[in-house]
Length: 97
Image (cartoon, rainbow, N blue to C red; front, top):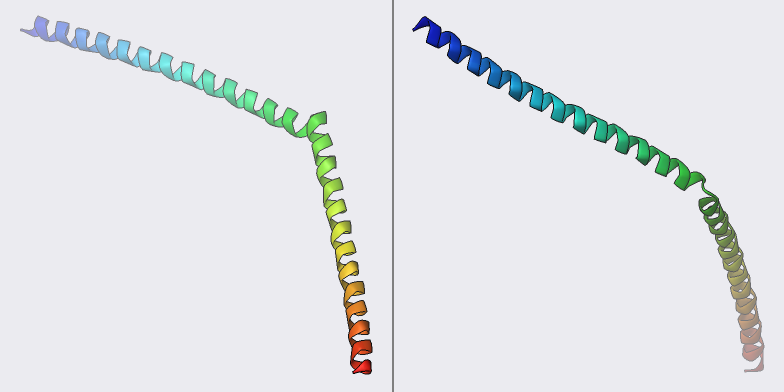
């Protein structure tokens, strides 16, 4: 019986060793894929933020923000002028009544 136990143990050890090797190979493959994707992602992020197209868009955004600020100031000024005109006309109307 002792010989049978050794053979069974050897078969189990061989199967465990094969399973371990398979898992190790899978792990190495997944690790390589992850590292490759991380590298590609960092390249994409770097190019995306520093590309001429992105810089041009950032410049355009800043120009649009400045234009909007000027339009708001103009609108406020126009409102102030109109309010003064309304006040002036209201006073004149009240004076005539």
